[in-house]
Length: 311
Image (cartoon, rainbow, N blue to C red; front, side, top):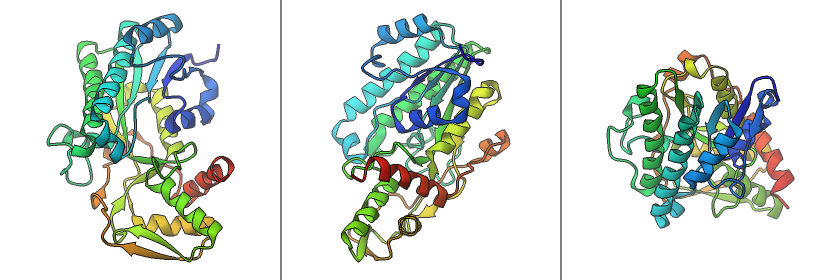
């Protein structure tokens, strides 16, 4: 048994879960990270039995059915129902087993579609959600509010929610069919270098701004939260507090990879929201900031890509 206790980590096979387990602080804990074949989180009885059998001291809920816009629009029932079930089963299973602390990882998709930037935690539930991923967002809001209600009923229960901005890093998905912006850029520019392409196309004019944080930095914030869950506010953004343009991301990736071609812009393509930036006021008061620069994060992610995805 390790020195600081036993932890149940859901979603241990995903990008966030694997970065949490790679962090230096993980060595201090006995971490249970069952894969879906071992524990079906949508099965309440199975989750209750697992938690009661292993009696974790703390739970980190990082699991979820995730996907891009096309997947969310094509399968709204699954994205709502499966994520609601997972959130409910893990949180209530922990509560019923007497687990004193739980860190619930949410998503900035919980914010209203028309909320002003920077996005402040108190804006949640103040307006309509983005329709393309509404089901996923509703499930994440439910889990957050369930943690809130548990604290209302039991002042000793430290059930808190962290709301990360967009993430990238090792263990990300690089397949163009289901990858997000930064891993997609890495794959595209790498392929251009391999094939000798002189130009890479960017959708839109590239001026839309996005906030992407290195997944290892989220893991660092999670481990700080683990040290003192009681010191967390009920819900808190985890982000950079600044963003970059799409053009900036392409240019930095090209510099890291060593591709010296030109970028073209297809103005007929959709670009989405012009900006989505989190307020980090609560995070700053908490005493944490993301340590990894964009270039360093992309460099580490590209090394992972070369080792596992470029074959």
